[in-house]
Length: 109
Image (cartoon, rainbow, N blue to C red; front, side):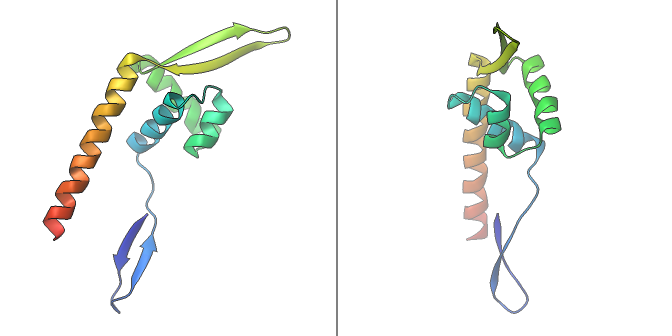
């Protein structure tokens, strides 16, 4: 959410679409917090099923998340865990976002 000033001088809230990077970070944060099941990750990241499947596939191939399968009585269960690389990239990108916010606030002041 962004707060912008309109022509009359009033402030209003505007919403922007999240970037793919923001969605990836939301998924990594959810998995880091212990959300393991795909449906729960989808809810935590506030995304659709198709978007989740696509991004999980990318995060797995990049080595940021591991997919773990366990055999149940009736079906195979899948769950996800963050890897050390995933944890490192999440920490790094969060620091970069904080730095960019700081730079924006000092430039606008």
